[in-house]
Length: 121
Image (cartoon, rainbow, N blue to C red; front, side):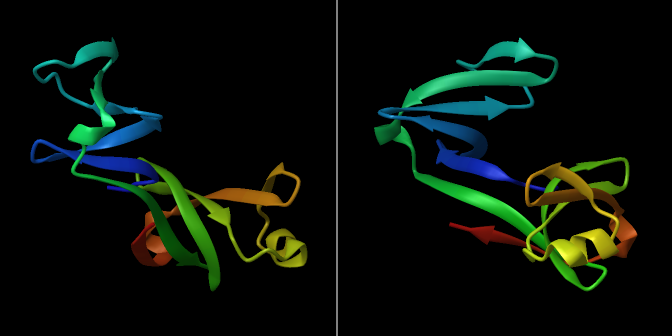
């Protein structure tokens, strides 16, 4: 599983999270007590921040074609990667899509990606 964003520990579980001042929005893929459905396989519960055991920002990093990337998502054996090397000529050489000024992304086969690891802030 590729994780990218905030994650919170609450009542023995870990959830995708979105901090909002004194509150934290917790997201789940399954229905649980106190969560309300907000979409297909998506449930939400808002809790006071003081109830949260831990709140971390998680990034998944990797190396693709010898260069550093952040993994933004995963679908059907492909990873959405964003170049973090900061060198436009390298991004061009790799054939990356320009997502925004100075931001380069691509879809990479999971089999071509190396050194996949989480970094927790």
